[in-house]
Length: 330
Image 1 (spheres, rainbow, N blue to C red):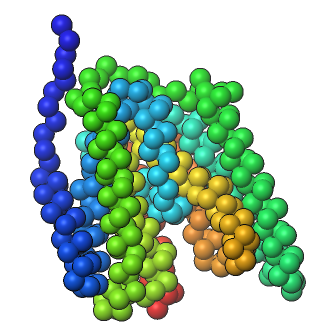
Image 2 (cartoon, rainbow, N blue to C red):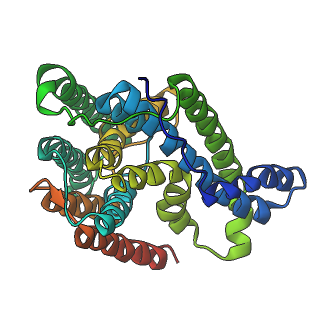
Image 3 (cartoon, rainbow, N blue to C red):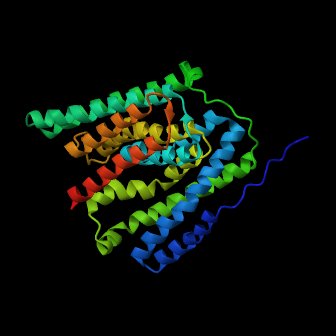
């Protein structure tokens, strides 16, 4: 007899969907601070919908494909490594005494991130060591970008083609409560809505940070990645609460790898096309926090097991960085 699947309860969190029309109304009325607050609140339930719809797709399509769906969501490197992974480990660790994940996947991502850190450090050393002209900086940046993107593609081929058997997540006897079409529809609509709300949020930032007296650099380093990638944050925690830590790690660490080795290098090429070159020369603080975050996550994920304490430690490291960034910006 066919099991139609159980009905999923409606979480009280979805009551926050009322802030979707509220944010639009605030935008129409040109209330910038209200737009900032309501759009930030609206992103939260939309993020939960993305997590639910993604889980339903993961059940129907298999864990590997479900992880790939969520791995396309891009967040900031440090926020994903410390905040997202820390929240996931802490939340899941409260429900489960110990959680396991594939250490091979974490190892591949960690190695890629260390290569990316090298790609950040070496151009900075060039500039600090001796004066160089703009063309030399651009040449080095383009070369680094090509290497990083090539290695990112190689890592994808390694994990998904040549050695895919080493990275398959274990299947579970689960029944989807939604049809594939419903899950896809909810995921698509939620993703579009999150994009719109994020756009409203970013557009209201200038007026909001002035009214709320938030340092501008702190907004760029901490606030925008936290709020703008709320969907990714919620989805990783969502899977960790269901003891699907492999997916949570893929979302958090995988997205960081994607940003460091593909998105950032891509920006170098795009910036050249629009005649506003962006190079790979970052400040010592930016390089330091990326390197520290990569090292901390590598040590934490080495054994393929985690618990709430490790999650708390990652969150503590993120808080230290956030507070320091606030005063550097000020």
